[in-house]
Length: 160
Image (cartoon, rainbow, N blue to C red; front, side, top):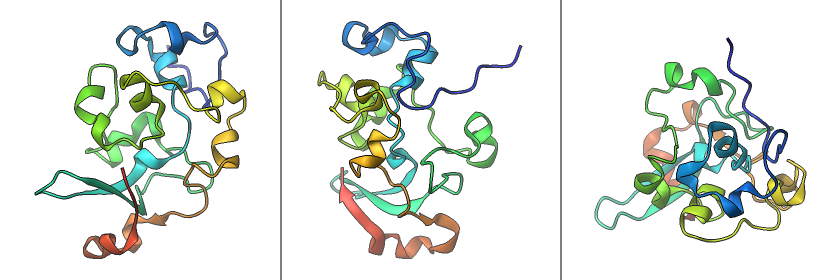
């Protein structure tokens, strides 16, 4: 049986109201976990990590699979065939990866014991709220195959 498509950010179809407030990350099912994604696309930006300090910075350089207009992975279900190093964030892996997630990321916020932000699609009820408030990467990323890796430092946008 084919797997259901990944819900759009903010999709609450078949989910308990405000499940994220009552259910710990480790107890969430796949549908609940995926619904936490706000659709910002920042996790798909290439990051630079300082080997001495461990500080992580986001760049404008997007993964080759990120759709610059939708901020969604163009090959989500098969992404590892194209980008083997793509990390699959799960309740079991959040602890080791939370440090490089954007500070606005729902996974990171909930892992840190914080609340979702008002613009999050699960709160606002619309998947466009992340774009409307300017939190997403919509329309301003650069494709990784066009920028040599040695120039990525020139495209740092923020420290995480």
